[in-house]
Each structure stands twice: as structure tokens, then as C-alpha cells.
Length: 431
Image (cartoon, rainbow, N blue to C red; front, top):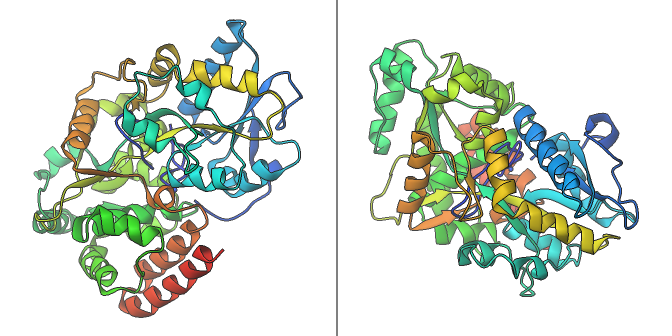
């Protein structure tokens, strides 16, 4: 259900086994807001206002339909305000700390929600969870703050992988790789055919690069080290982290050189047009793809590098949290109860790209081979991570954006880049 993005994360995505997921420069809210209905602040105990980052056409339309259905049921009223995803992310702290904040927000579970909860900015929605007994314990845990209170309600989650067009792989005579060596060989073959092997969209979505860091780190050093690093318990200038970049450097010659200039949505267009071979991205990218192209999409997992490292996958969870200062907690919880239900989540899947796993275990996902493959891949994983900022914080994401884009431009400066990253991270962790 993301809309970048989560990575950050600013995606358009979705899913339903366990969480997943990303983020940019400040801009004025008024310049980028797109109001579907209603104001941006709560109007007392009247309509519940939802601030949404789901701005891709399909995701936005899906949310509008959900709110229309909720309002027609007579259990309350709600209004939707859709904001450009990058603007949403940078403005979120301002929304939550304002005197008269919006009631409800689309965003991410995990450390991001917990960070806001630790500042007493989120509504306790434990009452809503009393009716979510079918939800898996993993999602309850992901939605629970350090205080023990539930502060988040999941809508869906999704997976990341290397996406490609089946028809193009067939035309080029190539197949999915399994190992890192296979992957580099595939890249070399595509390059020899005049095709930039790896798409990347760093334009105003630099967080896309974090997926590369996340995956290389969990493939080389494992998910536990990755989480400790993002929590400040390990150092970015550690030799283990340098090993990540040493391996990444092997793939840099195969990146689309134009990808640094445009965002992931344009990288998606390039992939679909056969101008790049594959793209490491979350399923949310499909919200920007024509419906008739979905049947030609496939993906493969990020290649195995060290078979001894327990298999982990990125699987962000999207959903909702509410302002602790909402003037209408009853109405807000009523809307959350509706959004957590089978009807709403199946409707969202149907109205969006469909490449998503609903959080409610009784809700049906698409029966497409692509969704079945994604679900199976996550089921094989020993560990599930979210995404860089979701496993750390929105405050740490810009340090990654700076370090990773600099590395892509100047890979011979790894040591200096990691020292700078560690210094920037220490400022974030020290508050």
C-alpha cells in the first residue's frame, strides 16, 4: 500500500505476510497537496480526516473508493487528503506535532511507528486489535510499541525483488540467476546486447538505493547484524559494512547511467519499454504500470551470496496510525476497524495493481502467478526485514541517501564515505 516508497521508501506498494518498504528533501505542503475531499485538519468530532501518501493513480483511486464505501455505511464519515509521497514523508513530523493535526495517516509499521509512539504522538488503538484475533502474531508484534500498546493497524504488505519482463528475457535469451556469480554473468550478457542491465531511479527518490544496501548487508552479514547496525549498535565504518560496498562495486558497471537523473517511476517506464533489463524494486512500482503489462512481469529474489547466511527478504508492511491528539478517537477507531476488515482489504487489492498481500488473513489476494511466487518467496525466508528507514527511522534515511548516492558516483572513496556516514548516523542516534 506504499506509494513512493518503504521503502522509502516513498513507494506505492502493498502485501500480507509480514512487514515492508523509503524518502527526500523538504517542500511546501501547499505546493504538492492533492485533496480528494475535505481539509487537511480534523474538524472537531465530525469527519475523520485521513492524510494519505498513496498518490499513484491506482492507489489513490483505491483509497477514494474505500472512503466512499465507509461513508455510505452510516457508521461515520471520513475525508481523504492525498499528498505527494516525498512531501508527506518530510511533513509527517509537522502534521503529528501541530495543534490541530489530521486524525489518521497512511504509513509504516515497525521502528518508524514506534519512534513516533515513543514521543506520545500516536493514538493507542489496542481497542481495535481486540477484533483482529485472526491476524498473525507477527503483525501484532510489528504493530505494538515499546509501551506494549498497539499503535498501528496493517493494511497490506509486499515484497522486493528484481523485476523484469518475461518477453524481454525470452527475446534476449537469458534466464533468472540464482547466485551472485550468475547475476553478474547475466548483467554481462545484457550489456553485450546493448541493454543497460540494471535500472535505478535515484532522481528525487534516492531512497531506492537503500534496497541495494539492505539486501547486500542481509546477504553478506545477516539480518541480525543489519538490524543492530540500523539501531546504532554497530558502526557504518565497520569492515563488515565495507564488505557490502566492495561486493556492490562489482555490479556498478551494469547500472543504467541515466537512472541517476530520474525517479523510480521513470525507471519503471524504462524497464517496461525494454530500455533496461531488470529493476530492484518493491511491488508498489506496478501501480505505475499499465494493467496490460502486469501479465508479462516476473521477478527473481536478490541472489544468494553466502549460502551459510540465513535467508532473509525485504517485506515491508503498510497501514495506518492515528494522531494522539485526534478530536474524534471514536470515529477514528471505527474507520480503522473498517480498514482492517476483509471487505476493505479485498476491495483495495482489486482496485489497485493487485500485486499485494492483504494483512487480514481471511482476505483473498490476487490468484496471479506473480503474487503466488512472491508469497512463496517470503514463506521460504528465515528472516523478514522492512526497509532501511522502516528498520531504523525517517531521521536516519537521509544519511543513507547521501552516502549511497555518493558511493554510486565515487566508488573509489568507500572509506571516506563510510566515515562520513558513521558521523552522520551518530548525530541522529544522539538526538
